Amino acid sequence: MSGLNTEILFFPTVKPYYITTAIDYTNAPPHIGHAYEKVLADVMARFQRQNGREVYFLTGVDQHGQKVQKSAEKAGLSPQDFVDGVTQHFTALWDKLNVRYDGWAATTDPVHKRVVQAMLQKLHDCGQLYKQGYTGFYSLRQEQFLTDKERGPDGKFGEEWGEVQELEEENWYFRLSEHVEWLKGYIKSHPDFIFPAHRANDVLNALEGTPQDLCISRPIERLSWGIPLPFDERFVNYVWFDALTNYISFAGYMADECGNQGLPDFSTLWPSEAHVIGKDILVPAHAVYWPIMLHALGFSDEQIPRLIVHGWWNVKGSKMSKSLGNVIDPNVLAGTFTPDGLRYYLMRDISTGYDSDFSDERIIMSYNKELAGGLGNLLNRSINMAQKYRNGVLSPGSYDDAENAALRQVVEQATPEYVKQMEGWVMDDGIAAAWKIVSAANAYVDSTKPFSLAKDPANAARLDSVLYHLAEAWVHVSVLLNPIMPDAMAAARAQIGWQMPEGFQFSDLKWGMLKEGHQLGTPVPLFPRLDTPAAE
Image 1: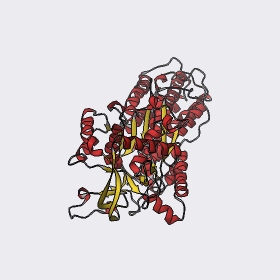
Image 2: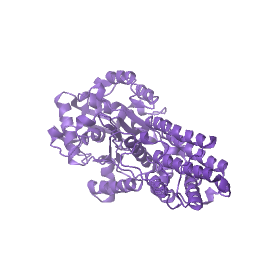
Image 3: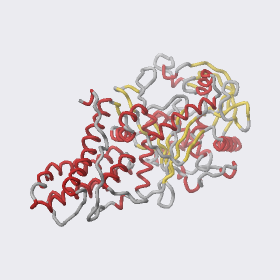
Image 4: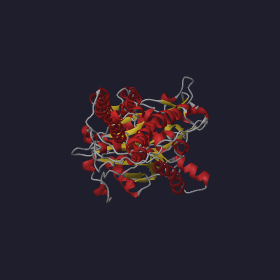
């Protein structure tokens, strides 16, 4: 079973925009895939706030399950102590990577447990749950029963299922099959349900054939680390009915009935605008189990959340795995390339919805060439020249020419293109739109040659305009790249001597943010170049 991670964001005009990611499965420390998902959600949350939307961002941890129970036993710890220890690895990483969430979801929280039990009781009372004996094969790794569909061409269950046991036991089942036709129709009539859209075909293909009901319990003799069924305490709730429910339990669903206090008003937050998840948990968990669970609970079609499905970070074309020894530790990367350098790489080198290959060479190049050499060097030399030639004091002046007009045009066109791409979850193209300013401004320095202009007093007015245009362009860059690299862009604005006002939005960006007589600060390398063998 792949773990969930949950992130929830709200972006409203009248109603908040609610975005979630899967919650992190606390059976192992985080890897770069976890970091990517959280940074992706955090970037969207920051972007939407700067775009004038209200945002609520929820993330958390999925702490129950058989693998957790077994790992805790092996470690000689109680399951709660075990998951608390693993959870600390996640929270420490999110803090390091500047992931700023508004709410935290932990599935061992009593708030969550009460909602899960109330939801299960509701489904039981309306006849959606039944008990039945079953004999079949069970994957210990994925914590699910297997059917013949999971067998390979040789008739055996593949390595991806890990240890498989034949079990005979009684369990509770959810009448999933009764809702499959509804789900097919919903997917076909709601093309925006899944992003990117081609993923919808994966779901429809998975729904072909005879629909099966879903086992939603485990006998307490086999699994004690879970939420007991309220109507039969000889069983605990199966993971998906537990983990998936966090999207609504911590958003205030059934808060009054469950006596849960201090939660958001569910009616103002739901439906979620986006659940951010990995492609490995699209089918069946998020695109089959989850919408059908909501439908069975009485949620209308208008209340079904949207799924944003991201791809994987591979290594040389292979999926990261412990057995291959190619798992990438984001803590190490953040320590080498800075948290913002890692955030930039994760957003720039993958297109949302598709896979990408992690590369040591590429992350070094992105840091040294793009951040240190392109972005940081532009800031450093712009401020250095202004300090050297004008004591850091800017004057727009009245001088103008075609080169100035061309740079202003690039700056003014960048914001709407950036906003368009970011709203469409195309973060790499959003960064590319902002980067047009960086490229144009660096080319502008090369063509105007301010160091030559400074030698002739007759060019004083033109030099003033060049220095002003460079600083003004950097203000715009620092605002556009703020969701991606918040600390670095705040540091850049401090050097420029301009503070982004509270509530400042992208629509507030216009030429002339810096006024006559504006004083620039002291230049400090924003991204000091790394000297590594691979960087040479």
